[in-house]
Length: 155
Image 1 (tube, rainbow, N blue to C red):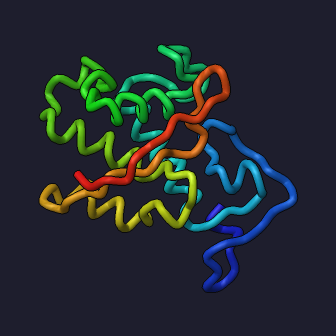
Image 2: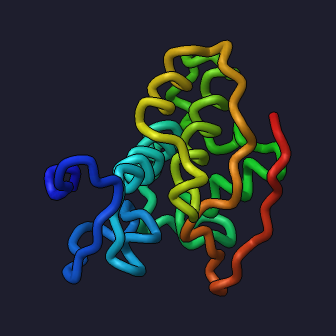
């Protein structure tokens, strides 16, 4: 999508929405708005899929419809380690939790609340960088269509 931007544009609108819904940012999927942060949302979904070993779409575990909601529920209940794919046993625990945090920061419902890709790069490469606590992600509903409430405290 980055190729669609003209000059110094940071956001654009389209009448035709294409792509896979489980990876689209909420503002693009619902309103046709895409920005430099739309790809950040998709990256966050991919990061959570890699860390968990599960796909976002077609995710039917617990009471969550999507992997994003499941990850959020585990994060808010201080059980993020339950999300980590057991085959990643060589990844230090603090890094696995950090990657979940980064993934959740990327999938924020409001694009302005999420990081830029350069911020994400810094978060991944600089372990001493303190990460903010993520807000509730976009598209995090349970199977009954109910949104769960989140919190905005710092880690």
